[in-house]
Length: 50
Image 1 (cartoon, rainbow, N blue to C red):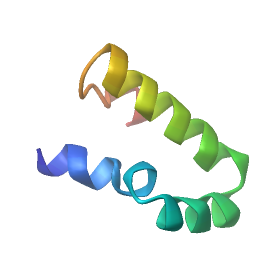
Image 2: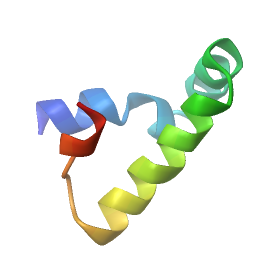
Image 3: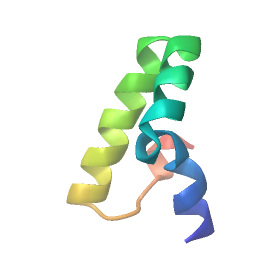
Image 4: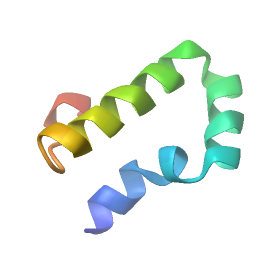
């Protein structure tokens, strides 16, 4: 659960997510979208992000 919480910190906190997206550019937003889809579709499989 700890790994999941760490990876999901930005998507879950929209305010922090916006700051990170601004800092990192569109790649951060793209990762957030993929992360949310992964949670919805596959569960907590973050292997593709490694």
